[in-house]
Amino acid sequence: MQKQLIARASAFIWPPFAHLALSISMMVILAGCSRGGNAPNLGPGVRATTTGTTAKDAAFRAEDLVGRLLFVRGGVIWQWRGREASALLGNGDAFQPAFSPDGSRIAYVVRGNDYSDVLLADAAGAPVSQLTTNGSRLPINSLERVYESTWAFYPAWAPAGDRLVVAAQPAPPAGDPAAEYDLSLYELPIRDGQQKQIYASDVAHCGRSVYTPSGDALLFVRAGSGAAGDQQIYRLDLTSDTATPVAGVPTPGYDPAISPDGRWLAFAARDDTRTDIFALSLAGGKAPLRLSDVGAARAPVFSPDGRQIAFLAIAPGESGFDLWLADLSTDASGGLRAGTARRLTTGLRLDADSGLSWAG
Image (cartoon, rainbow, N blue to C red; front, side):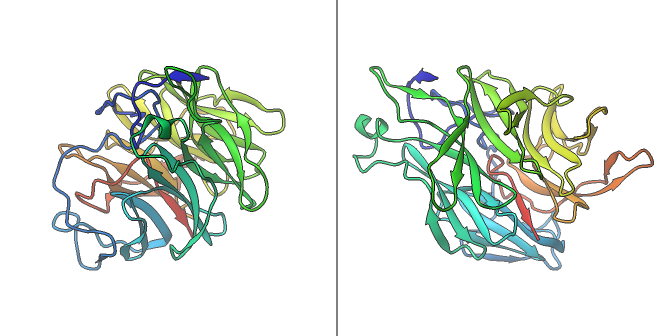
């Protein structure tokens, strides 16, 4: 469905916390929640050794993480590996990284003026290929450029590593005045083949998605068009092409992540005036379990071994997102439990909409 184009920006915003508002015609989950504050001077290429530091007096707290964890700060993709975090990829325009299932490649989004593209890099951050060409060679900020440009966001890998799902537009804006299309879900082959639309709605945008481990379904965020659209997590059956809300996930709910064993769905959800991380058994029959109590949290991701969960949150009385970590366990009834969350960074103002990606 097309919407009248009021103004275009180089980034859309679909804010779960509603701290910012932009005059734009499309609303997509972006990190509009970070606000103010002084950040440490850690630019691209700077390595931050965490050994011996604390969250109180330094940017990074000492923590030896399993595998490799990606996060985004200022349009630069960072990697936490072992006890060190360092800039890996990007020049201020790289967002939404996603490790491939085998950890050998990274899909990510590059945002430009009036468009965004999906690219691939290897695990070391070296460019591999560009999967979309959504931009225009026409003058920046020109109306003609708008009529040739489209957006793509939120790459998510299929379990076989042969394709991605992205939220993208079917075509550039059209008509007079210009109207642009809602974001739909598309499968994007890694090698040969055409982009294929797998879900679209006349009354809603699509956002972040994640495949089930079997690859036969996709969990994705669906939100009514406009600033007030409620985010819901839907399940798209890729065999029958039917999409239904995931039972037990409250509205608004967003940022879906599935545990490595496929048993648990983690997500961010509003609870009165607070937003925290919850988990729901994908087997059904149980209420969501709270995994965080920070009050402004989102973007959960499970560790490769399923023993920890990381997420982004704004500490009480502060501004901007930082990285947090909690250990996971199961209780006597089989319910998922999280220990007290440990804050791993301070003052970095991380990009919450880019989320986190964790590989072995």
